[in-house]
Image 1 (cartoon, rainbow, N blue to C red):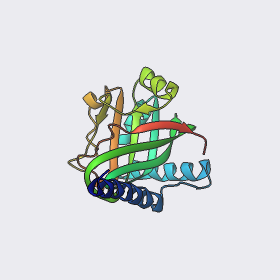
Image 2: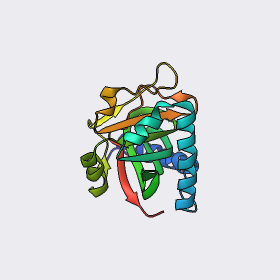
Image 3: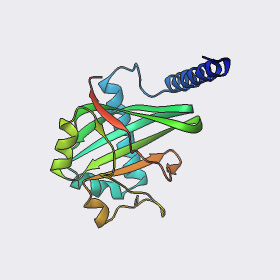
Image 4: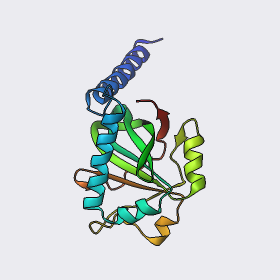
Length: 189
């Protein structure tokens, strides 16, 4: 191994270690008091959605189940990752807790936090999610984005999709945010 190869390997290690340390330093619920903390964050997320995006009320009523992910922390320095925890609710009742993880590679630097919701509009989509050993968001997810205030881009066409996602942050919707590649795994908080 040449000196240059060792240096590049060392830099990759330091970059990935820095991304992990940055991600761990952000408050995303890791090491929290479990289900009660997650439920409290989900309740706050539900309140925020109903207040800022009233169209989500009807979407929630039509959904077979809703996965609320109130805080996802994403950080990266060449190598990046994202992590957060949330709850799956059916008819407003928490039935399971999930973690969301995502890895990314490429030119990136920085950190951000956001929230998202997955509305399972069909019974088969919900059953597929609940029965998997790690469901990954892919092409089966339709995104609803807001370009004109509080309707969150929800339409009859959107509601016919098996899974509808809304990604948002404190300043409103995050344009261009995508959940593809995010893996959801059932956890015991």
